[in-house]
Image (cartoon, rainbow over all chains, first blue to last red; front, side):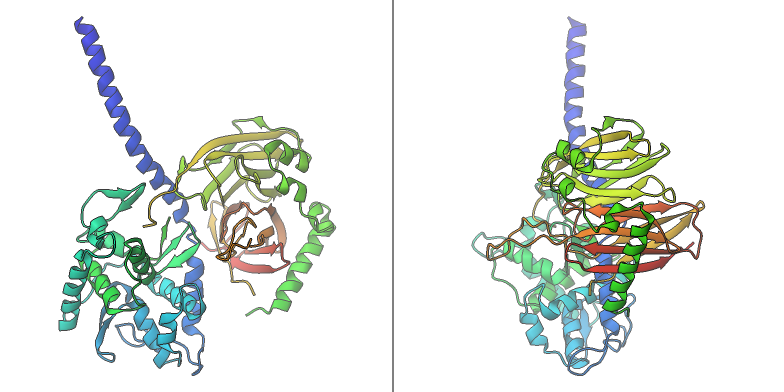
Length: 267
Length: 152
Length: 104
């Protein structure tokens, strides 16, 4: 009788561990899939295009972007991605990579920044911004996030970002925090990073721009935020708006010290 | 920056060169293996390619993930340590058009190819090696395709 | 003109491992656009790889190859400085050739 009981307990134990092991193995299997794709990220195709567009004389002024100041001086691209968003004295505001590119495309090349901001993703000069963003982010590969929080506006934007992150609204009363403020959440098989602190913040913020295999598109943070708001049933934010930049500041500062992996590979 | 004209000229030269070797008939008449690529099941693919039904062999190794997070891009690889591999084929059984790719190997490359396929749904993936002596060998693996969540 | 490929050729153990990323939509022909119209099939149909000008690998691809295709193969007896050229031709007659040098 005792042996049967022991046998039964052993069976129960192995069944339970079996179930747990099966669950872990799905996560491992997905990790293996991602690892198999890591070498040869199609984002590289966008990076190559971006580098070309940076150097090419374009726009009404037929000028290149090589004098563009992304926060560390004109023309400096290496290492800027991990210090954005930040305050820019010439525009008097905190800007992220995409809005700063619009500034440079307007002042240096003569493009109409407002027009580009209104252009849908995947059309016209939005493709230029996307490619540039891919290349610029790649130039900070492996570097640690270190957004400045010196200027008063940088600190304000962090606080604004935090408020926006937790603001519940829209038809479903969602906020960013609904999905991204707790450890261990997922939607189906997608792990949801906790963006309020490391490692989630670094992993989440540092993964964009990213090449999305599901649609073969390169998504910048601006696009990712736009789509997050769509999923939350909010109205679409304006491209390069203070709201989106503030959220970038919040996530980026929370992710301080994490290594950038952009441009990454995403489902 | 190479001009379009130069590139077209270059590719025409390549095609002409390959056509003259007699080793790559598809360049001699610029015909693409349409029948095989339009086939809707495995048997018709093999028929279209003019090869026998493949035999399971440990001499062909297929690399593929257990689970593909997204069917749009699934890495697949095939290697063989056997000498005399003429062609490596990849097939996804449950795709509307199962034949994915045909690789013609010269003796200057390893019998090792890695590429990426689209999968319409969870399915068996086949790596087929067509040998110089006419033997046709295969390895297969079931790859599950998930939808995933909201694209994070 | 089609966007350039990314080709990396690395010498290893007397051979060269070649990794290629091609820029191509690889449309299956069964997808529909926003207006409900079928987007016609548009895919790379033929691929050629040469080593120092000599063809070493060719391939025929259908619509099942993933968008922005990736290809990896190994050229035997290749050394640093050798030239690897990849050519693709699609079903619209468009083509692209890019070259890389085997690096250490």
